[in-house]
Image (tube, rainbow, N blue to C red; front, side):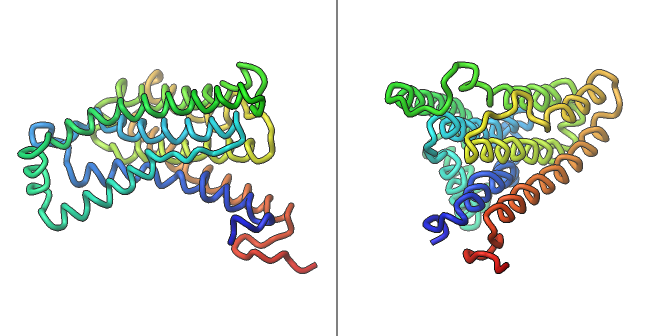
Length: 275
């Protein structure tokens, strides 16, 4: 198995828990395609759609923050539950149609959008409690990797800045966001994945992460141009989305290629290269 072969553990971990985090932004998009954005018809108001993505990334980030501090990855089950939920909704929608699905929940339980508004804060709270508890146990056992409060909390600086810039964009440039919500979602997804990949590398190498991730300054410039300077926010976000995509692809290729060269292996083979 790949996980048993020490030669490919690094590439497997980078792909399984880092690069594939990019698929996270697709989950809210697929849910919105089923539910719609009309709150009066069990849809999720577009203004609250970022909360769906934020709730997923929050759980995902907390799990990797745990590993950064404990050396052990407690799997982000909320992410897996979200994927299973999407599959279930698609299956039920295929059988009942979107209108039938909404009627089923509304008549026998609660409107679907109300359920999501309940589960989002519950997910936040569950991730917070479990992660803090696991880190606390690691500190008590003396197995923690970071030995100062600043070192333990350093990964949160970039994550918080990422959310401040991108989520405030939806407030200050609401019309642009509502007109092109997928552009914002793609920008958020690729930017977040870049953070995760770099944190994964820090975890594997037992090195301290950057206080300000390299992806934050370009995002800050885009935010400043669109929100403060007043350049058309849609154009700014589109340009930044393209930049974030190429930056993520370049980072993914570079990291995997460097790991393979260092271990003298091929990316998709478990045997070593021949000299």
